[in-house]
Length: 272
Image 1 (spheres, one colour):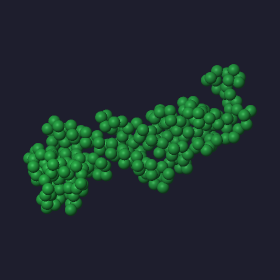
Image 2 (spheres, helix red, strand yellow):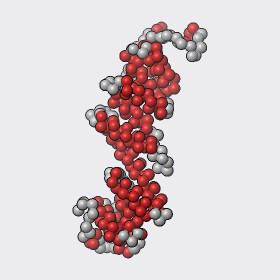
Image 3 (cartoon, one colour):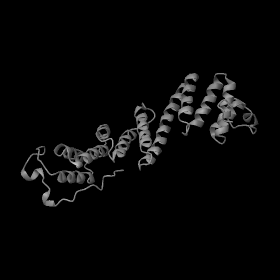
Image 4 (spheres, rainbow, N blue to C red):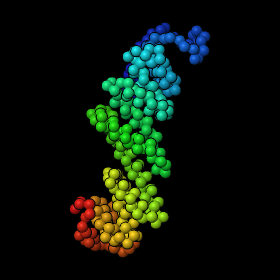
């Protein structure tokens, strides 16, 4: 999402000064009008030469640091770096724009672009989730600072996906502890999912896994109370069926017909 695609000078062809025309080397410094440099950068961007575009946008600022187009070029540099998959550099460029121009009309886009830089780097749940947390924090900042902006809605959608990813990591660790018989450690992980990621798809399984762990530890009352919470909130889920079967037959096979006992259990979470 690039709000600057419309920003383009109309410059006569004869006004464009290219380094090659004078026989100069590629890296030779040649002073050029800001219009010329910016247009070249935009052409490179449209041609998907993102590396060249980032370099040329930098040149706008270097040659014309006090021009209004230098400010725009700073943000366009961050965008070109993002498209070039140089996410860490794009984050730095976005942060620089935010610090230098906190009141700029396009600062919301800088925050959003920074969040995208983190979001696109989210790895699978097998790996460390530091970048995922950074993505969530940055997306939350966009939604909080600019709730009425065109970026807030997309940020909120991505926040939901990011939370689901973080919850998935907690579930993976909890299941690992459970398979090793470390049920208390597993319960702690499942409780994190229930407490911190209530809107994710992982909550029903987290409740069921807690039932399994409590049952394995001989804490039948805790198991029943947790199963009651599961049954109240997710009565049609397969995880409730599994918990109900476990608590009534000692296995996770097909559940019995009657479930009246579950409704009579006191809810420790105050949901009933």
